Amino acid sequence: MRSENELITLINDKLNPLEVNILREQNMSVKLKKDELVSGLNYLKARGYSHLATISCVDWIEENEFELVYHLFSYEDKINISVKTRIDRDKSKFVTIKNLWAVAQYYERDIHDFFGIEFEGNDDMEELILENWNDIPPMRKDFKTRDYVNEKFEWRDYDGQK
Amino acid sequence: MKNLNGGITMDKSKMTEMFFGPNHPGVPGNYGINYYYEGDTVVSAEPNAGHLHRGFEKLMEEREWIKNTALVCRICVMEPDINEMVYAMGYEAIGEIEVPKRAQYIRSIILEMARIQAHIFSIGGNCGAIGLYTAMHWGVLARDYILDLFEEITGGRVYHIYIRPGGVRHDIETSTFQKLLDLLDDLEKNRMPEFQKLIFENPTAQKRWKNTAVLNQDDALRLGVTGPALRATGLDHDVRRLMPYGAYDEVDFEIPTGEKADAWTRMKLKRDEIFQSIKIIRQLIRNIPDGPVSVNLGNALKYRIPEGEAYVKVESARGEYGYYMVSDGGLKPYRVHVRGTSTPLGLYGVEALLPGTRIEDVPVWAHSLGICPPEFDR
Image (cartoon, rainbow over all chains, first blue to last red; front, side, top):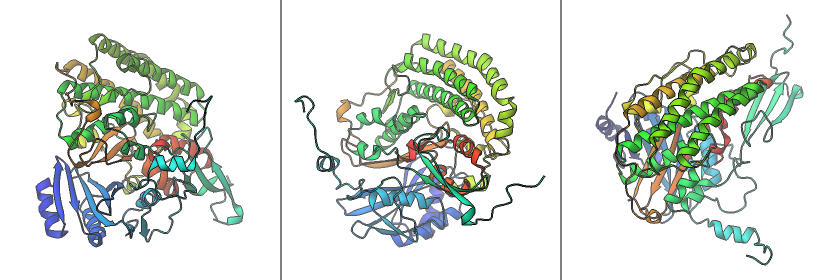
């Protein structure tokens, strides 16, 4: 069983992170370069961080970047690590981690649906939740729900009331 | 006897495609499984989600922090309080807000009541999946008594909007605690023995659940499955122990585990967990401290927390329920990502683990593993 501080030393030594933080007790975040992410996840997985809770995506539109967050947990250390990396918003392409966690291919498909990120190596990128979607991916910050509704549907009057 | 199934040949001309759901009594919710079967056995399957998408995550980005407390409970019908709790925990973690002791106790009581009703309903639903409709109706009835109490405490039966950032909405009367204790006595002395006779000593249930829908430990860990499905494989992993929240670090309870990892073991675990929840609520009511039940966070429509992020999780009736929340310091959340408990099983699990199951056991598989489509189709 490792403590948060031991883990910081370990990660600083081995993973070459951009940033390591203790967010709270039992919660950490690690920021990695995008080409070192898969090897970083592989390293952590081999050291007990084998529970992949999910993959989150955040659209930082002002910095023109997408942030991918991989939530790992270790049953031995009892620590959550959110491993993060940023990719360019215009070239929204990243690599799959389905060779590490097969279950990730569905999380990636979900992100592809809602943010339009392609994952190289994951061939099955069919629509999972959305069907026949023909606008920009809806979870992007520049997708405006109200404009979409006004464009797509017409407002009706009910007995003269708007 | 000759095996009429004749083994699986994977011969395309012998396979038939079946659309199981999205409207089917054996499917838990508006969700489908498209599978091919040969003889009686499923040989390949894929999930057919998307019939229930309501855009919760996008909606949350457009509403003030407090308004989302009335929204998150709608994500999963069976776990409204869990969603409220995990949302409030995320807010408090980013804003570094200390919640009063009494509020933590009340939250834990509410969460354990929610766990009991979810387990009773789930056991009933599993009986529905194998045709024991009497048990299903009894399950609904037993759950209703708990919902009555929820109504008395919060004003709502199914959706309570009771746990909010900074504490709970209001205090619970002492007389209500007494009613709750009476209800638990009734549940323990009358209802559960009835369920024992009706369900767990029923030959049909034993025959249909034993050695059905087996999820072994390697697969469970590989997929990130949690909750009773993981504990049925012999591991005692429970978020209430691993990362205590609420008042769980101040109560004494056991975590039931099983060996066989089939539907029968999972049902027995749920039954045992109901008794543990009863034990927890009794301890909490006995030791509940006095004091305020919430902290004042100012004007509700002007809630604001600093920039930050948090991945918070709680143990729902079916396992880890997590939110990843990001704040940019504004009046609304910047991003909220919901990790529903059954996400790994409902999506990838169907593809990887369902093949090999017999057709009539597909509903048992889906119900006993706690597939809840609204949480991955949120």
